[in-house]
Amino acid sequence: MFKAIIGNFSVRFSAAIFNLLIAILISQYLGAGGKGEQSIILASITIILLVDNLIGGASIIYLAPRTGTKNLITTSYCWAIFVSIGCYLVLNSFAWFDQKHVFTISFVSGLNSIISINSSILVGKEKIHKSNLLSFSIPFLTLMVIILQVFNQASQSIDLYILAIYIAYGTTLILSFFLISKELTKEDVFQPKLLANTFKTLLFYGFQNQIAHIFQLLSFRLSYFLLEINHGQKAVGIYSNGLSIIESIWLITSSISLYQYSRISNSDDKEYSLKLTEKLTKLGLLLAFISLFIALFIPSEFYIWLFGKEFGELSVIIRLMAPGIWIFNYALILGHYFSGVGKYYVNAIASGCGFLITILLSFFIFPKMTIYDAALTAVISYFATSLVVIYFYLKEGGKFVVFPSVGEIKEFTNQLILKRG
Image (cartoon, rainbow, N blue to C red; front, side, top):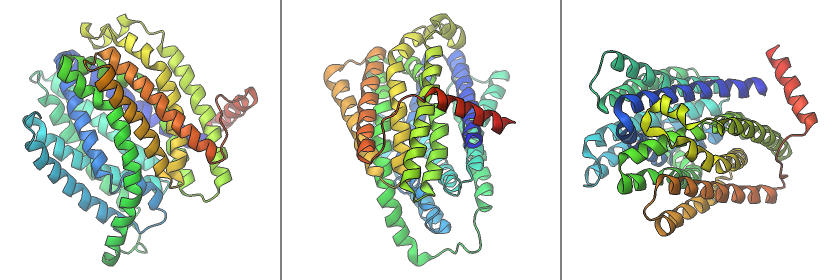
């Protein structure tokens, strides 16, 4: 268990470092305005990926051990291509949307979707180390291409980021095809007659799962667009950097949850799944608490040195958001329990409550949303989402846990030492 979790964390930590370096380079080279433009592009790609994942995405992890892989892939690929073309046509009709980025957003979202499909197949077959390689590849290649351009004194425009993501996503897509080809066996026969049934199954689970992700992402990123409308791209750049730093605490929990999701998806033992979830929840909450405690003492001067003089407010944003970031670890780990047993509707309900809170606060309490209003809105949304997931988990027969006991900490430590030895 610890070997898998540490492997997941190592990859995600490395990816987070690369993303941080990308943020630093863009912030220093293009300023807060350029960083804001990059954040809007990335948020738009991520939102389109949510639509892509209505047929595919994380639901594939649950279905991969239960359904023909070739049928899953064919159905999901066709949907991804259809959504990318559709988004291109729709975004081109929106006068308020920056038209110069429409093709990039639509095309890269399609590449991202297919990579996500291939990665989910790998996780569903418990080939997590291969999925981790894909997670590592995108930020690493993006960073390398940006560094080369900065070193060669490329023009100070968002084009240097756009070129980097074209190369990173394109290369990772080729790598994902190579990795997934190893998992396609002769026994797994493509059955055209079952495509309609596969589509219905993917839509049934994918819709429930993606409704949760759509609500969640809109709760997290709606503030980007409201900040841009009220205060411009500079405000988005500052807030997005603060959010990226504080959300990196979730690297620990996401590493734990990936292992948990893979194990539960391949098990029919409810008691085992509940005990595993509670054990991992305790570990995740403790490690997140320690990480947040350290983050709270980083002074503003450090962020000014790191990103530039425009980013002195980051320490205040991080302190405001710390309680919500910690409590949301419940939603992440307990939510993956429900995903692992196919009860995606629980996460949809919880994320829907969080999104409703975000809407009410954004449009009725903070109509002229500032950076600090955005941070406070996010914290309240995190609390609401987490409390709903906890409620459903207790109804499921699970126990409410917080931190591990001293004995459990010693057990974790001993297991870690034995694994490393």
